[in-house]
Image (tube, rainbow, N blue to C red; front, side, top):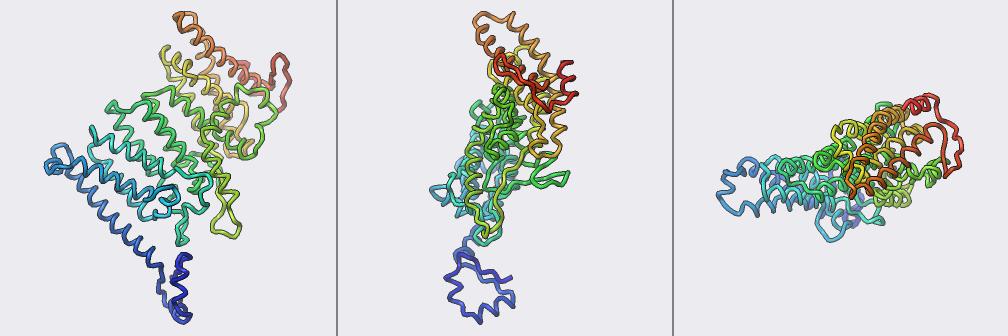
Length: 457
């Protein structure tokens, strides 16, 4: 197990060749003293931090002894501050912070935060926990596009410091704290928006290798969402309880994400039909904008990869399974709306149009074209949800327009017109036609079953 790290070349030069030969045969471990001290400190600090967190959980209830000692609020704040420092590292910029992280520190922070989150989170303690978690996620993912390609690589060649399981643990913690905050009626619109933005940043955190689970065994494509992708959907479901329009818009972005990644990767339009259906593909443009920083970072890492370097160049996941799952969530959300007011609010907020465009996109353009597994099933579900949700919803909205107050009539009429444009674009492509003004041209490749399904609708 002789290990001489690349960062310890000066140390290795002081060891004569005979000593190195003995070390390699006997299993002596030669390690950089500075790095060894840092690892030992991380392990020691992690033990102390976890012990303090456990003590708080066992004694920190409202009537517990910690509150009787005093300065409990400062202790709680200090514990979360230390946890944040372990996750993101210490230093000024992202590069300096990353160099100070180790696998031990990141793992210790996750364990400590999980223990602290089991404490009774009320009042000021709850808000401190939420703000600290948000700071952890934002600082961790705040990586400049041109940062070194090995930013997340351990100096001893052991692979990435922050891994997929760390991202899952971080997002799971945030969902738990946000749920408690929502139950306490303390989750604001800004909090919900921040949760979704951070979930998006973790989803395509290019410096962390993406997990690719696949029941079909195809590398890079998955028939079911990965653990991290499932947690992203869970975060949207949490937001939907208080902010249905915001959640619906986010689901539409996730449903369009596979097409956005394909367009970005191929650096081309989504086929000849795209120029005829800007209303349908506008949601893809929104998804591209939402993931712009992550995509730019992924491009830089690809271009910076040296064939003789460690590991392999990062590749973006297709997110096809996530897109199909998001379409299912969209359909269920629209079909479960029993009242007129929520649907009208979704229309005026633009979320209804986004949802219709995302379902229509899956209906007319199978993800199989993007090389994913299970794409045909996604297209079938897109068609099913489009037929179940859109025609009844549009009829209800037209009735609402006739009954709505005069001050809302103009805004609703404009929103309804945009919705009809999206529906018309989806119907035209599903029936094998694409229109540009009054000029309509037939498109090849539309299945007969799709046409019959849409004509029935």
